[in-house]
Length: 117
Length: 110
Picture (cartoon, chains in turn blue, cyan):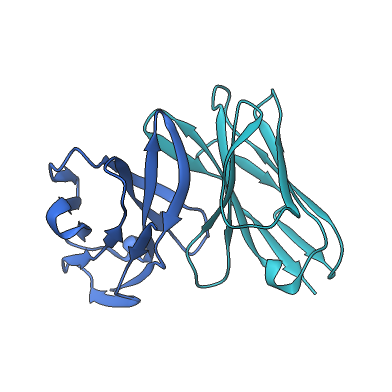
């Protein structure tokens, strides 16, 4: 069965600190997708990244970076120089890859990040 | 702005009633998924529609049903509402490598 674990329930950091959100997943599929989403207090889910299981290259987008390690089934997310606007709940998610369609996206329980000015 | 809209924003129903939630996605987004997000939890996959046919379903009973229409709109219907159905209901549509979520409908069952 597929499962996503985000062990950190809540994290508080002071503005400009770096913070890493952990994500560990379980799947028997050899091909799958991993995702990160942000849910600010307004409630709308914001897509951040999708990563194919065959692509283990780390990715950087501005202050965001992702570290995918298949050997440890982890897909961690780092925010560099955090800002107050980064305060939100962050979800890691996993889905089976079926062609161009998604199926049964499994979300983790989320990590609530508070950035204190 | 994701281009995905949902209506209504909030809804209050009583146990046993039926409810229909609506979602409108962007032109060309042939796949739409619905999720239920209980307070303090991650979204749970309800089902997915591709070109008007259901092609994936999570662990939800048959009283949760859906429709997708040719104009890229879709519906989530829930019959015989239970108190535990109180949640934020999200729809999402897909294009290439991106998934776009709507703002959600907050359903409260009393």
